[in-house]
Each structure stands twice: as structure tokens, then as C-alpha cells.
Length: 373
Ligand SMILES: [Zn+2]
Image (cartoon, rainbow, N blue to C red; front, side, top):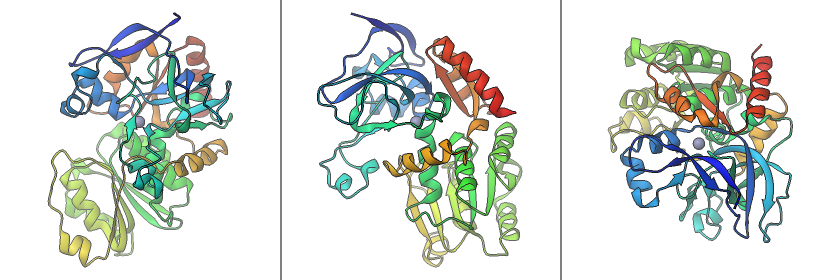
């Protein structure tokens, strides 16, 4: 049987191992993809560290398992029941394998449906030369989008959903975005590209705050050098004393959550994306929500496939360039360096992209250098 190189979680402890694995055989309604680029997600970091979440969600019994779920690649084989995707298609993958028969899914919220399975969590992932996935979650890429960009569309989808909310009523409005992780930085880019008029960013790490500026943040403040009162005053000063129309909470810390509920204007929207270390946690229920008449929008995943469609159009037509967020690229065999970058504090990196093949890695470096000029 033909084999491939893969990054495998072998033991219920920190790290992963490079291993030679058989190339997977796709199930009847799955396809096999030759991976051109893949990227490291926060979920992969949780699994790599084997924190309490991954120990409970995946469990030692599921190991060994190949890591990864963000991908761009070429379809090289399709199962006999596949109808839509063909050999040679250039695709990325929605990570959530939804159950089409579940009521929530049938009502259109595929991303939070029940019986959800996740690539790289419930099945082998894409940190490998080849990777198998259901045809139903394949997303055809525009050829104008290079693999190092196409692979980051999955987290970019979360950012797109967070910015647009359910009504996409954001053009000409003001927005606070908290945090300086990759999805906060992507959200700034999306907000800019869909016409948000003023983007106020709250971050902590200088290197990533610089990326936020390049992605389109208009005003910034360090959260680690200011008080909540100062931050609120800053927002009021820049919104005619009203507060922002929309506040995206993308940190999950009590301070950041409190900031968002206090900074949003009356009848505005607070989007809850950050995951709190401890929950339940207190919010100013009366003044922050009830009397404000504000909307709260929880984000878990991406609107399937609405955000994919919008991002493909924005990326392929040059309206959105996420290049500044791609801070590091490595060969897949150097995955450990990538995980080091992702966990280093103070944070100096945002998105890390990995390439199984040297030629693709070299070509991507040239493309990235040209775009960064
Ligand atoms: Zn991801």
C-alpha cells in the first residue's frame, strides 16, 4: 500500500510525532485530496498540548490520530457515490461535518446542528500529504486564490460571520474588535472590506497590533496599559458619545466581555466569540443588555456556506488581503516550529501555514514576498 508522511498525535501528552501512514482510501461519498497547504488552528494547539478540553473531547482511546483541519488541495480520487466534486478540483474544507437530517441543520443553522462531527477532531486530519473528507463539505476554490490563502478560509469564515452577524447590516457603521489572535485580525480585514466605517481595536501584543493596523484598524488601544474606564471613554470620544454600533468580543476574558457590553450603543449588537476560561460569569444584565435593548449574537463556527461564498468573492477579487496575518510558513516536517510560534508569549505570530511539498513552499514564499511589498 502506498504511504505518506503525516503529523500524528500518538500519545495522550504534549506534542505529536512525524509518522509514515498508509494513504487513506476514501469512503463511497468521500474524496481524497493531495494537500497543497494546511494551517495551524487554535484547536490544533489544544490537541497538541493535550489540554483538559482535548483529553475530554477526543480521549486517549481515539489515538493515534492525524492532526489538522484547515486545508487547500487538489482532489485526486473520488468515491463512487460522489456527484459534485471531480478529480482535479481545487478545494478547501468546511471542518464541520453536519447531519443533514437534524432539525437545527434543516432550519439552516448547519454550523450548530446536532450530531456534528469535526475533521481533525473526530476523524484523521490534514497535516499529511493526503487527506480524505466527505464530498458534502468540500468547497471549490477560485483558482485566483493561492493555497497559502485558501487554507485560511476556514477561520476567516468565523471572522466573516462575527463581523456580519445574521443581518449583515454593518456598512457605514462603527465597530469595536477585541483581541489580537488571528481571528480578531481577520475580522478587522473583513470589517474593512465590507464597509465598516470605523474600526476600534483593543489588543495587547505590539507585533499583532501592528498587523491589526495593516489589516485596517483605525484606532487602537492597549488593554494591558489602560483601565476599563479609559477604554470606554476612548470609545465614547470617538463615537459622538453614543458607543459603537457593534462590539465583537474575541478574547473571552471578563474585562473584554465587560468592555463590549459597556461600549456598545443602545440597540447595538454584541457578538460573543471568545471562549471564557470560566463560565458562567457576571455581566451587567440590566444596564448592559435589558435597558440597552442590545442584541447578543453567539458565534460557533461559520455560517455554512454563506461565509465561504462571500470570502471567496472578497479574496478572489482583491477586496480582502489577509497576507499580513500569515506571519510564518514552514514545511510540514517542521510542524514543531509552527506550534512553538503559536504558543510563544509575548505573541509575535498570528497564522502559521505548513506545506507538505518543498516546491509549493518555495513558490508560496515568492508569492507572499511579492504581496507583502
Ligand atoms: Zn480552524
